[in-house]
Image (tube, rainbow, N blue to C red; front, side, top):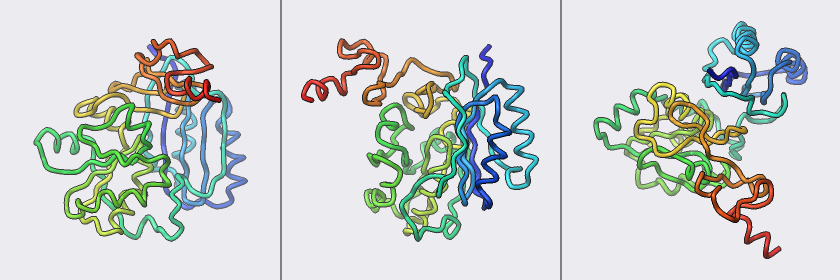
Length: 273
């Protein structure tokens, strides 16, 4: 049985005295690996380690009233998918490039994973919008999901113009763990979209509760596992260390794929250079 516990969690909550808080987190995450982002608007983290050590950290974290209600998504792996432990200070949990945007001005309700599955099962008419980057979409996404072809999440606000014909339809936004939708869905609600929902806990929570029902492919994750299947297990999908392209098992069989050197997506660019 896999011995490494992985967690993903975030919470929007006002945080102050961030430099001191960073030192506290550095001390409390000794023995773990991953990233903790601390911002004035809240916390975002991806951590891995021995289950007992990580559960001890979670107990400490949730004893703090600011983080008591943090939703934690768990998965297991054979190895730690991070190289080191980082505690960073940033201005935003997720960069949005909308300085006048106030997340709480137009709240969008969260749609539980089993409710989304029910909508699919019943053939309900709705629009489902992938708020992730284009390369993440190509690794896997929900059935009939709209791809906004984003280069980064900072492009999302402008890309919603593509959805203008759906302003009065039920719209569900989703991302990997839910954090991007905490800004995407309220932004859309503030732009006049009348029925916007955000998938609670993102793809990872959906996999945990519903498996891969109505989902095609895998879910890209930003660590050495690269992609997870509907059982939250790492797959054979890999990444090119030369150009950072995601590689399917078929891509890895190409003669252009040389580990650490090239892949089918960058070998011709290197030849030109």
